[in-house]
Image (cartoon, rainbow, N blue to C red):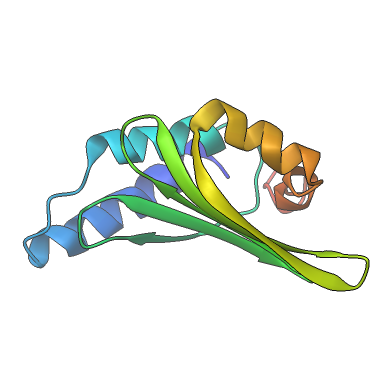
Length: 121
């Protein structure tokens, strides 16, 4: 996901939120950017909570990863993936740095990455 794509989507969600009198969290947006910018990730589905923080979800065949950026360099996450034909669900709270390592350990980070064509390279 390119930086400008992310900025455009965050701006769009922020404008929608302000129309509903919700103040977007700049810290949450910065946390989101710190995880995805420059990583060539597939564009996630982005949404904003009633509290003005951002959520991102990536989804594929047999897996999904949803991350809620709390705005204090912490995230809440829900991950579901197929393990031996069974769906395994994990959830919790983490600092931003460890969540990337966790997703890599589950072999989901590579699934979240875009091919060069998808990334527009």
